[in-house]
Length: 321
Image 1: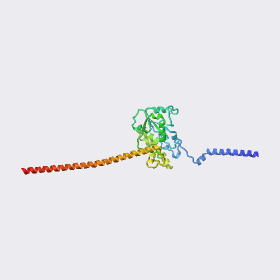
Image 2: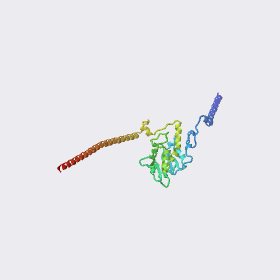
Image 3: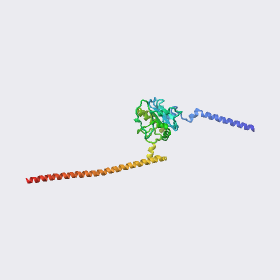
Image 4: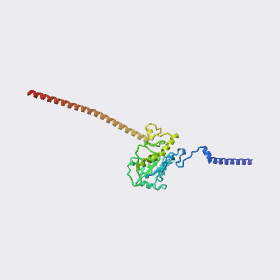
């Protein structure tokens, strides 16, 4: 009986070993991978070969004078459809530096040069605000500008700016343009919000007076969106557009609701003032017209009376003589 049990145990052990060996071979069998149609990725952009955007990169890396520093939120690195790699693959090596993190201290061991860069007089931070100036108003310098950009969602970028005192050091700049984002497969906060790639492309084109850079650097983004739309993605409208047209289905923050109500009240007040002004102008215009008519008629009556009296005097004088 014991022999039978031992025999059964040996058989079970052998079966387990055979099963594990089979699973190992299965996991490493290229023909099985082909049968499962596992997608092969491009080693450069890490995208599936069928939707690789590398052929749309410039044939030669674009030479620029500006030094670009992209401070990337860690969560942005997890996104499959990020645009910062397109920028890094498009311009010459060493000109686009991607630095990942949420907090950056003066004693940054991982990026020791970052503090000096942010303290430099030729460094500007591309971040909107009341104290930000239009990037087109920057004076030309003998040395190239260091352009610092925060990469992430608006909430992430805002958090990075608030929580890092180093980011308060550079002069803040913004881009003012009516350009609509080509990143149509991702919802932007406003109609004028641009992706990281587009923002840097526009900023560098302004700093170096090279408008053609925009189309050259954003060509991979156009390709990415085209591929995604072909495979079932839908075009996204901005959050601002959806809210204005009643298409936003998610709950809005209380702060945003207050701001929207305040803006609506201000617009209503302006409209009422304009209506009152128009009405006042109409009344004044009517009164002015009446006064003008009375004035003209009075002058005409006085002129006729004067002429009548003159003729009557001439007749009287003639009869006397």
